[in-house]
Amino acid sequence: MVPAQSAELSPPTPQTIRKAIAASAIGNATEWFDYGVYAATTTYLTQAFFPGSWGTIGTMLGFAVSFVLRPLGGFVWGPIGDRVGRKHVLALTIVLISVATALIGILPTHAMVGIWAPVALISLRVIQGFSTGGEYGGAATFMAEYAPDAKRGRFGSFLEVGTMAGFSGGTAIVLVLNLLLSDDQMASWGWRLPFLLALPLGLVGLYLRSRLDESPVFAEVDEKTDQTNVSLWASLRRVIVQYWRPILIMFGMVVALNVCNYTLLAYQPDYLKNTIGLSEDDGSRVVLIGQVLMMLAIPFFGALSDRTGRKPMWWISLIGLFVFALPMYWLMAQGFWWAVLGFVVLGLLYIPQLATISATFPAMFPTQVRYAGFAISYNMSTAVFGGTAPLVNEAVVDRTGWHLFPAAYMMGACVVGMIALVFLRETAGRSIRGTQTPGG
Image (cartoon, rainbow, N blue to C red):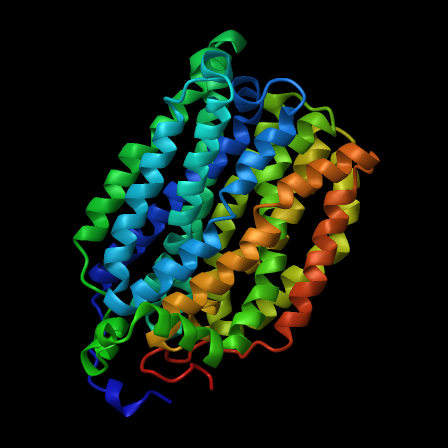
């Protein structure tokens, strides 16, 4: 039931909702564009920053280290977003992410400045991680609070279209450059170009976000409860003490979500090349085909969740991945087209989770702590189990020679997700207005 204090809230116009979707999605696209480019240029980054014994492990460490700062970003940006509003925090985080990504494109290499090259790369990845700690949770919250209750799954899914568009766009640009430039040109300067493109992408996102009003759900609560009188530490303590249950539930669900995500999207190009033996271009093509099909499927599953509920979507995804992970990873080793089939099957099984993030997670918390609760839980789980997934997979496969380990790792994560899912409250169609926990 909608709280009485929220009864007079006027719904945003369709045009405003479309602007909110675009503003949220492009920030997510900028974030994931960086991850897509980083994953697709692993070979060149290794040559430029981690020559010698560190090799690919050093590059994967550069990928993982950005996630170490994500929880800190969540602890800082989340309470600020609940205190001063979603819009202002999201404007700042998209600038930090795009500038840090672009700066990677102008870094000197190890051959030029020695150890300072990987130090600079890792430092920029830390800035990205800290900024991302406020970006994703804020964007999902912002979009959820603009969307109509009955269509929150459909509209929220477009945030993940931004995810896949950014990731696949980064992969596609690197693939095109590989076709247009020689290996020497790519190794020398070609790998830098995709990183530089993050700056104009971020500026477009900043422009879109600056032209939007604060989310109506937040504005309504902020008008009636003065959050500025609450210190950031008090806000943080309130979230952790009073809302530990949804924090733990989300943590477990995000273990499954992000182990699958970063194994399939970030680690897969390197796995297909170094473990399966595909060429770098063929590995990128496999991932790109899968990403495009996944992107097309996202709105369908998002809209379907409005009719069936969020939990059925998650059960289908988690059980499907648990059952098919091992056979599909075995299939990928049989050749290029088998790799395409195996990757597409796993990718489409993963989409019911991805498509419903923005509808599921923000609805687990009331308005006054929604940004912080989402950001803290999501980023802590992502830091421990998501961003480290490529590093864990690479290290275990390299040490044991067991090529099916990524499948087993995903299966274990799905078990954790299923345990957490048992305790999730269904909130499809429920209002997220007011200061009460939705579905409570």
